[in-house]
Image (tube, rainbow, N blue to C red; front, side, top):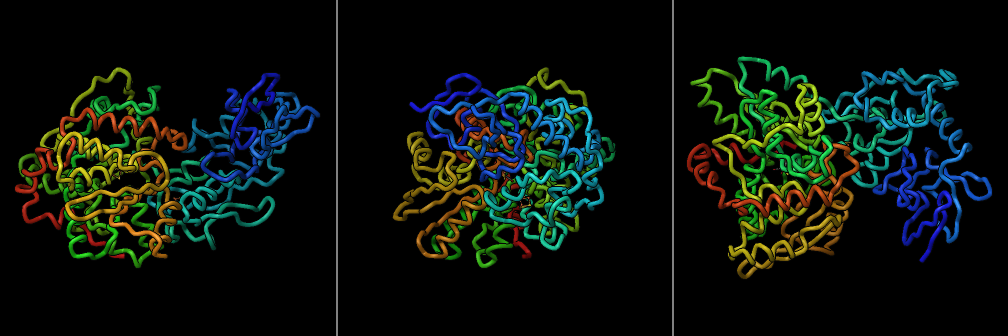
Length: 565
Ligand code: HC1
Ligand code: SF4
């Protein structure tokens, strides 16, 4: 066994790439601004320094562990070093913490407190960079370079994980910033609105847009009836913000909380995920028989749709024409509202609670408006919902679980697993498989579509045909697959792509966005599926009445989309 010494204690290690990982395994939470296991090692912030046996100071993220190595993590020299870094960062950082969107969640704020930085000796000496314009152009994120500490996390995330690379370092010395090319507003770049840059930003330099005020306004307005739908992934992450273990399903408590907030109708987006399964499975069958526009690309992840449209427009016809479950629900709710309005007189406002920042941009797309009115009026993230509960003084632990509303109150387990990578494919396969036995359903989960690997593949046999499926998450992984398709080295019939690592459960709107808790959150969704009495979309008893009722002659208008781009 290999081992090293951390603060005089022997610590075994195996394949840890750097001393930082060994130290963290030993239970010491070394501070960092620029270290994430998902990203390459940058070594810029130097907060993770350790002292070696000769009194030298090394960045632990950059140092590979050596057999018998002796290091200390907390010495007067290290304390002084960390304090100095914090003071230098603060000398060029605005300090209006109370009105910053990251207040209470900012790592700079937290470390300044942790290392007792109560005054900044170099105040102003480095030139307060306070005059950069703030970029509010995107529907999903805001960029405030005045709050940037140049850790480069957003730059590496956008490039290495998402393969989009629309932000980079610019300038030199104290004039250095992170910016888009030619300082274009981010909305004019190929940014896909995934929000993953905001998820890694340790300060408020990149933050998720906050739409709470508009939702409150609608709730307070007596002339409005406010309906809300909640995405599958929200239920297994929300509890983390209230001290519950990751992956715990708090759907019932959340519904109770939403009623307390004043929402008039509460629904589960999974219901329309069942509709998506019906429509997408039919679309796949059709394309397989005509052998056109294959592989079929799933369309529920708006950041992925944006990516195809900007990077691979030649594949735009491969994107499924199905609206995402959120947009299908938005259209159905607005349609349904017409009949209620005659009785009730109130205008219906439709809100969606999503783990995702790109959903804010999706709901604002022209294609999802009818007569200029969006089908989904406002999208708020899991984190914004947490804040709404707190604003309303709701004590989450005291909520008793409640059920969603009729007439759209039943969903299947297939609709719930949409929130995890592989879930959409599994749900579609359940629909397509002729063998509807319990054993066949079990077999699907062993085809290779479950699990957190970035790219997976599976084959299923439908009658005479073998269908090849790829399940990919993280846009860099998806890009690799598309390149292989282009090169002709792989061939698929169906591709499920999700921009965020892990699928929606790892969305940038989730609590502690980078601590993705992928295993626990996906476990929570698979458990909910297992506990569902209905596990196939076609068995959802509200689906067929919908087709013969509200959707009659309106399937195309309400459930499908033709993108303008
Ligand atoms: Fe998703 Fe979807 S699963 S996209 O990941 O298809 O955001 O959770 O709501 O629309 O149902 C997100 C999640 C969500 C849609 C569904
Ligand atoms: Fe890059 Fe996504 Fe951030 Fe846009 S939202 S800058 S694509 S990481």
